Length: 172
Image 1 (cartoon, rainbow, N blue to C red):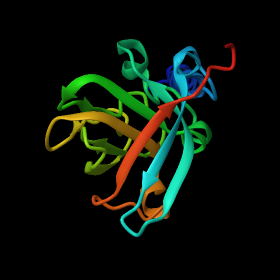
Image 2 (cartoon, rainbow, N blue to C red):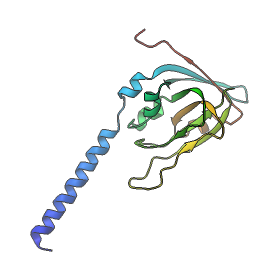
Image 3 (cartoon, rainbow, N blue to C red):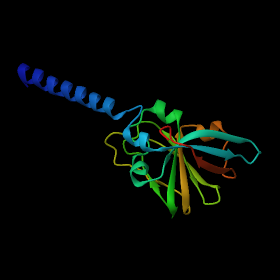
Image 4 (tube, rainbow, N blue to C red):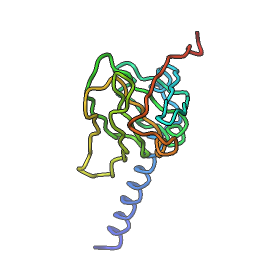
């Protein structure tokens, strides 16, 4: 390879790296339209030991907000506020990590508030053909996505119960 071709190849490779770096930066947002459309809510987690943990959530209760979830959301926002996905009827959903930038956890919630299962979800590795789906064991009516280690830090087990309520929107 001649010197000129070598320099040209290096410039092409370098510009490709710079462009891909810019693309990554744009995919992480601290707030976005989908998060803004999610309703405010509050979740209460009643542990088997009698302790109740209550915390704010965003509620994804329509196709648009459920489809968006934590896609393109920065890890700091994921760690700050969980998303509660509510379904119109009992379903066995499949969740993926497409365009999610950080590990998250998800608890699938049955109609009686019990936890069907908890999954530790990992972002896809760039270029990987392995893109797992995460599903409940049985039909559920809700799913709670949180930052990593949330369930461990709050000592959540499958025998715990989860309930929720909508809160007034700030613009009401």
